[in-house]
Image (cartoon, rainbow, N blue to C red):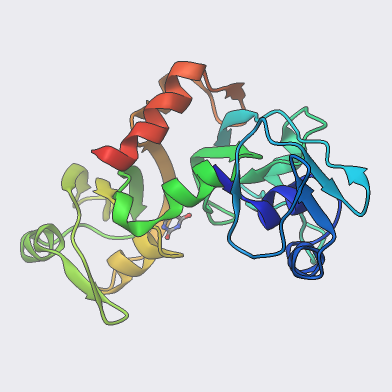
Length: 238
Ligand code: URA
């Protein structure tokens, strides 16, 4: 079930705000019944008529992309940079779930399913994301312990589910760490390491929930299977 105004907006008929206005001004019918209250939910079989026009609902599509560097995780970019949406060959109006920074590589889901977007983006669902971060310095033993115990970032605790040092190279003064977190705050991994004075020089998301990058090279994408989509929905109950 999805909110009526959202379904109208996602059909491309109008914006979410305008859809709300159309509902409250009595221009929307669901299965022949006038609906003029916001918050009404509809399912995929409901017939929606707005201003006498039947709303065409898109089939849901789901893609898993291994994002390359130098792409923006959005539908459009005001600076004219390349977007990850442009990498996917589809005529559906898809958008990414969450974000990866411009210079971050790795897994990101693109879809036109707003319900899945809400579910995965909601902090209460604790979706695990694993990142491989290359740091500009050799890791101090004490700092490793601090990173494992969690740090307060911008006033809020961030506690990794897993923290594993993959490489700690004293001679060349760099390290590589695998970190798993459930949060989705912007730049959270970079901010986490910069809290103790480390700079992330390369960042890759290798795992998103149960999905791994093992079958996708950077720049490649594939459709999610129905089974995988169901499993993502089931993350809500885990
Ligand atoms: N954390 C970051 O700092 N950057 C990303 O792209 C993702 C997580």
